[in-house]
Figure: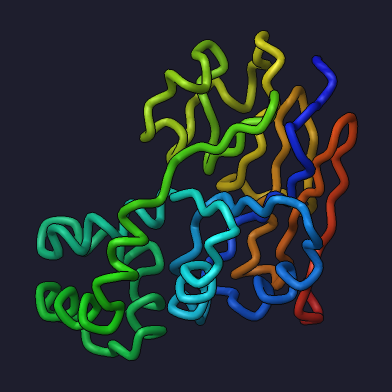
Length: 227
């Protein structure tokens, strides 16, 4: 595998899923490196609203969109057709974080969510990119097709993953940092850098410090017994 060589030092943050408390602590520790968050800021955890507002206020951070942001956007666009899936996969917790406790009528819940978020946050959510490239490091949410150049990847592949991603190494020298797939701790395997440690369930939010020739993982945790 080629030597890892980003254009500048990176801090790549794993899936936050509503854990605003842990995100704040990661950002405090990040230092001067370029911070890149891999997506899945919302759902499942208790404070998705806090996560989104924190990141919206940080123009210096690169925020990618994950599959949960995609589901949330689909709910905003078509609450009756797409709402059930999002609510099943953590959307209820996101609504509650915005003060919306009733969601029996999907259209009413969508309207309340748009009001609570405000137009600027809704636009920010819709504008999230699906990849970030620095040198030979590509940061995505879920994975990439190892047979396709990063620039040519479909957004859906980067947000939802690809069946070959975990089993086949790339041959173009590109390292792919990603979330989406939970590991007990950060992992480096065949040019893949995994940073999702299931923060909403484990109380552990992982981030990777990536510099030329080096990947180091750090974790912030909430101290619960099973963390």
